[in-house]
Length: 509
Image (cartoon, rainbow, N blue to C red; front, side):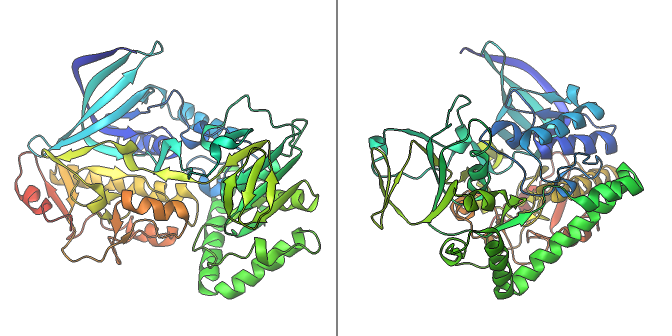
């Protein structure tokens, strides 16, 4: 691979980083509502889709219904409300075509550095562009705004702890994030280490069809709450027939938003009752005599971590059929033929899947500088869940963890549009949130999941009250992000302005 440097500098009003579900949604909203603004989407990979194109492990699917995970402006028409990755990817491609976004998306454009100048009121982005032959050209792009739709996972590598004896194992070890397309698991004994959404998805998927595994074991240190949900939303199909595609979708979306919120609030308000309810539902699905309290009774309350979803109970069905099993224990070491547990039991395996989670990383890990000073994003506070204190004209797309990710992204985009229009009307060139001294600090992700705890040291913070608190309620955000676009915490300025620059020095506390 050779590297060249381009001296040409392109100018845009808005640069969207990432062509996943957030970036494509943002590009649609901005191109519609900000027609006089120049918009470009920079995607580091060869394809759109983000997560839904990157991950190729068996059974990859949504764990939210597509009537809320999909866009409000584009009805989800497939009968499956819980959808496989290829269906979601098709939906995103349709969105690109229907909204004439193809010309806006630039593939193999990886942003590796971002520098803000108050003097110019512009971001200067350093972008690596790789062509089909592998030649990389470094170019500069200047922009008024950056909308970072990069998600919060590190896509180059997943999280995989060191297991003693790893080198002794005579079979194949694979992480779901880097699933080999040619991996043959037919007739093999598979052990999946982990009990999150990925593991719960893979267990039944690896037992389907002619290439099914002989047996799949899910090995977990700690149980997870798993709930069944119909793959097909019968009421949604009826509403579509009665009201038409757009109205039926809108009503279904409204229904699901409020139902989901009600379930989350109920489980958090009455955790003991919620735990009993989930236990009863699990018992209905599991074989007689199954130790549900050992394998499906987590030490935390429902929604301290995200619940896992089993469409049509597929995860429980394969356990009941005897094709899959759940083991709750700790790993002592890998052996030549499998995994030795601390209890002394040994699990035989031909393939070990380390579904142990993902690493977290915002903005692809790129360095960010403001007026020549490097920014430590872990010292910034999220303002209205999307802007960052001390960083001008920079928005980030982080969706919900207790409901569909995309619900929040749609609200963020509408706020972004209102903010840009407000700045235009009042002659402002940039906006920067300023956090007061002494603000209470909390992790930006209010979950107890392993990946959230590990990632807290890499992510911004949130406060305890608005506008610095990350709301996890669509209803709350719908009010906060559709209200006045500014308050005393948001400072505006113009090129060369020193007032906001001096105030920004106390923004990170």
